[in-house]
Image 1 (cartoon, protein in one colour):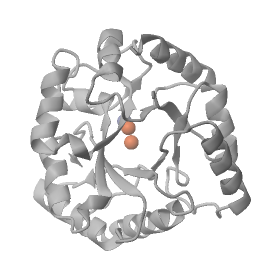
Image 2 (cartoon, rainbow, N blue to C red; image 1 turned 180 degrees about the vertical axis):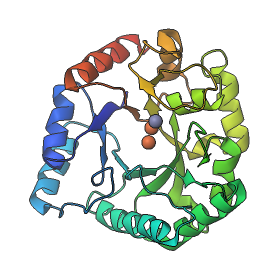
Image 3 (cartoon, protein in one colour; image 1 turned 90 degrees about the vertical axis):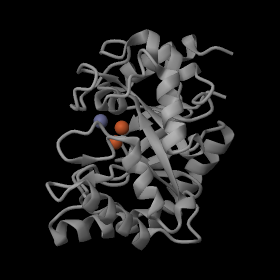
Length: 277
Ligand code: FE
Ligand code: FE
Ligand code: ZN
């Protein structure tokens, strides 16, 4: 099974996203839980959810990923900013139970001069406050480019967060190919080595999803600007290896490339053509 999709607009609800996904050849997708700038979430429409779940079942959809607003900062120095991250994530997790057994991905945060250790502690504290024993959602920490004071640019940082979380059976990691390459993990020349390093530091059992993006910037640039597949510094050959790697093949792949739906459809068609049986 090749679960592949892209980031879709949630403005028209789940059924609309499901139909859009089918139209572009996808069998999963990612969406923002609310306006990425962090506004109020729309009320859950139970009929929409029910009709989506039916469509997903009939079409063999893979696991979905909800993405937290990227403006949240669980390790902000400012208490109000940090409380806002806490409350938004807690509310998102409650809402996720309407579509149980999916993923909730978030950017760990930026320590903004407090130091990486403090950042890690604060992020873990937020997770310890919001995770619940009975949630069915797995929360994914995203690998980051290490831009500015971002936490999560090193696998060790993600591991340190996971180690400090009590209910860490509810945690996983989403590997963003643009971010790790920008962070200095050479997935172009040594994909096996990077995945071995991931396994050594975090454990491949934690790896739940891939954000499949090319990068506009060179290796280890710590920049985080996504490029269309094959047009950036990662390139077509590396992407071919990534979607076929035995450690990654079974995971859902989500495109976050700068595209409209047509562009996504073309990328998905290309990926299917290079995927080996
Ligand atoms: Fe992200
Ligand atoms: Fe990403
Ligand atoms: Zn990014």
